[in-house]
Length: 140
Image (cartoon, rainbow, N blue to C red; front, side):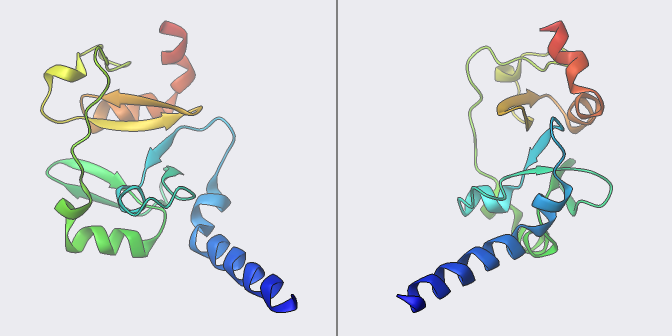
């Protein structure tokens, strides 16, 4: 019985250590971005992360991707196409910043804010949105 609790404690400890950047930098109400490596691995604890100046990031084909850790960034940098799944945004999705129709684009980016996924035509619009998401939500 003691061994069972010990194993559970170790598992929880490793989970917390693996997501330390996510837990430590999370701020209530701040928009989140999707870590493509954790999304690929279905690591639900680290998929949505807060992006700030200290967040590991990489640029691939002109789009900036953010990561929960340096390890995820390094894995992505070795083989970006492995982690970039083709995702279809919902029909009628519109960029909340420039109001461009997302379904008409070949490429788009996304972020999660207050448990809702928002789609953008570019990293520029996503960055602008993340600076003041409530401003754009009020316009919806």
